[in-house]
Length: 178
Image (cartoon, rainbow, N blue to C red; front, side, top):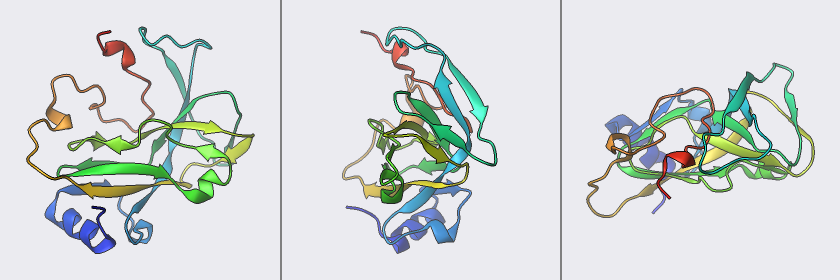
């Protein structure tokens, strides 16, 4: 079940959901709009290797924006830091962003219960498009979880994305055993 606006506010009051900074104007009927943070990154190598650490170059988006081009994976980050301790947060791109040919998350839509961080965005574009820090980029939906939770993400021994960051984080696939 998706939480309504009043239920999201109740859960924030209760402390099971944290959004920093919180802007009441970003609260929709059943979601919360998140915004593009100041930093964006590109992988250093043209060929990425799933078994190796693929390093990134991170830069700040200038005030007058930056043009993204097709054929590249850009890693962005949300301005908002979030914590979800009793719900599954589900991130979707805004339809207005999609209508510009921007996709923000091909694979990482759901955050595990206990995810506490900013959200790294996997940004691809269908044609060149100019983006700006602070622009609305996506919306978080909060889903209820049925049953007890015994394996919260933020306390898992092998959790790869728990270090708080205001910058995009590269893939940590190489830490998996395969």
